[in-house]
Structure formats: C-alpha cells, structure tokens
Amino acid sequence: MKRLVIIIPFVLIASTNLYSSGISEAREKLYDAYIEGNDPLWIEVMNDLEKSYKKTKNVFTLHELTKSQYGYIGMLIDKGDYKTAKLILPKAKKNIEELLDYNEDWADVRGLRAGIYGFKIILYPNQVILNGPKGKLYLNKATSLKEITPSVLIEMANYKYHTPALLGGDIDDAIQYYRYAIRLFELTNQSSNNWQYVNAMVWLAISLDRKGESTEAKNVLQKLLKQEPEFVWVKDNLYPKILQNESISKIYYTSKD
Image 1 (tube, rainbow, N blue to C red):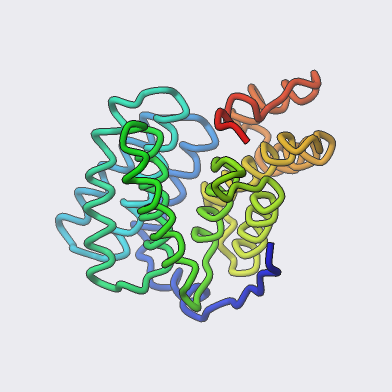
Image 2: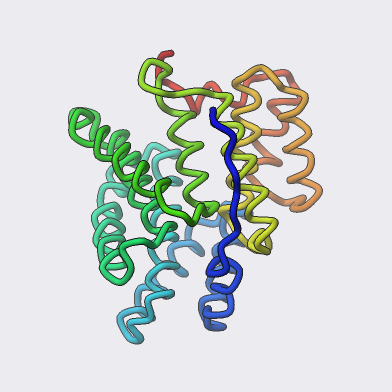
C-alpha cells in the first residue's frame, strides 16, 4: 500500500462549530446507544433527527441523520435482519444524493455513498455484478478528493477487509486504514462521543485478530474497555472470546481469499 499522507483540512476542524446544540445532543445519544447496545434509543434519535430535518432543512442535521441511518443498517446486517436493513437503505441513499446536491465534493458523504453500495452487495448478492463496480467507483471518487476524512478512510478499510484478495482485498491495508482513521479522529478532536471512532477501534481489533495478531487485538479491546467499561459489544462478546483464544474475526469474514 502506498504511504498515505494525511492533510487535516480546515473544514474538518471547524465543522463542529457549525453543529447546533441539538445535533451535538443527538450525537451523544447515538454514542450512548452504541456503547449500551440500545437499539430503541438509536431508533428514537434517528427518528428525532428526521423530524428535525423536515422542520429546519438544516444540511448538517441531514448529514447526522444519514450517518445514523448508515450505522443502523450496519447493526441490522450484523444481526441478520436484512429485511429491516432493506427498508432503511433507500432512505439513506436518497439523503446521500441530497447532500451531494448541496456539495458534490463533500468527502464524508462520498464515503457514505461508497459504504451504501458495500451494504448493497451484502443485502442483494444476486446484484453484485452491478453494485460491486459502483461501490468501487464511488470509493475511488471519495479518495480522489484533496480532503481525506476519517469516514473515507474507514470505507477504504472496510473495502480492504471484506473484499477477496483477487479483487483487491488486503488485511494489512485494512489495518493501516483503520489506524489512519482512528488517528485522524483524534487529531481533529472528533473522538469524543463519536460512535464511528470506537467502531473503527473495534474493527481494528477484529482485523488484527484475522491477521493472527491476537495479542495486539486484545490490547486494542483493553484500551476500549478502559475508555468505556460498559461497552456491551466488547465487554460481553469480543473481549471474553479473545481471552479464551477464540477468533473474534471469523464470524465477520465469509469471503474467500
């Protein structure tokens, strides 16, 4: 993998100043819902964001709503609830297109669009010939921008993790992209109360485990538990497994190299 030079754009550092107190409150609640594994709270916040956007037409509210929909789709897929995920996906896709109409060079949103097509590959496997190339195209467009954001880096990591090696997948690249995303969250003061930040750390641990670096994976999970002792997914699932020398990656990887 080519060495990635991270340039911290001013818009990333300044963007949090544009968030209203209502959006900040929503982000904190989404974070709590993620840590607690509280799906009803997540849905409640997601619905409140949708109502708020319909009332205010605030583009940053729409962005937060779209991220919450994206995160919810991922959670539903992890639980095998494809039916509900398929209902949410068109809404998220519509919102992404609206955000890109506002700013076609919005890197975070381009990353979300690539992620949506990643979900489509899982939800509609019979359409992989159509959705696979589109997802890669949108990911290339996102990474072609001058502004490299944590969300874009996460999508690069996800692509490298889930794609077979013959099609460009590479676990070493995935690990590096997750690390870059985590570091950029930290450098731009976006790590506090941010579910995407802790999610990236979890997937870093899963990737390290898949590579066979279980000790380092355990260290990442220990760091997460030190930060959030009641992080349900880690406390009750991943960490106990890795302490028993069980793989925490095998259920999150089904493609063949």
